[in-house]
Image 1 (tube, rainbow, N blue to C red):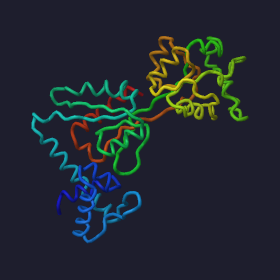
Image 2: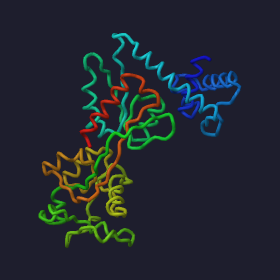
Image 3: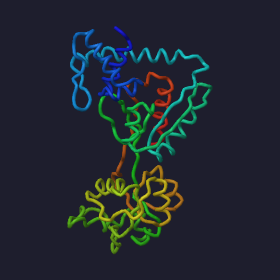
Image 4: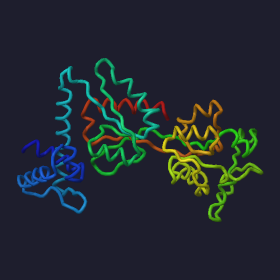
Length: 325
């Protein structure tokens, strides 16, 4: 049986689409279709069921993929590790959210790029979860950091770390919402969160007496949909924020700068705002018993961890993440 046909078959099986598999293999879609039909004729059995959007493997197709994929991945590993020293410097294409990638992943990975001549060149792309996963599936990236766990067999995800979200604002807003002594005791000004379309938040939410409503505090966010603030409100207060975004800027580092300048409240990852909290540039407005968390995943195309430079970067990031949590 032709190994090229098997390679195409496994790629289609993982991609769930002739079109996507063609992009990954650098072939035309008709070429991929022809190879799969040739393999089906040789086996005398259909391997995929054609659907309006993509393909679904038959039972025979799943069985063949289960048997063939590990051996094809092993052959890739042999080919990669057999490279001579002159060609050992590979390029790793990394994609992820701009702030986390810049603050966490890149400082960790750059330590590997020239390590004893066994490192790799590094190219980086920024994007949201949907963009980086689509780029990874299409073969534009080797490794992706995502806040969404991908579905299907084409991509393999490993939990990397959790980030804690913090409700922050400049000190002047905190002073307007309550005394410093009360804040240090953990009481927070949450009165503004109590009324959303006539529904009040839970009565056990700690309040500062006489504090103005938080719905009157401007909101700084990365998008009009208020993804960070809405997630925090739903998790901590079991309701939706009433105030619209006053300052919208598509970068969490810019959100922090605006909040520190007094533009309003914001919800940010603790790793990003911790230095500002320590300096007193911003203060935490609330200290929930269970802070909202968001999980990051390290994602690769299934089978590509057989490539040494991808495997080393993957392992290194997982190891570095032990110090991030």
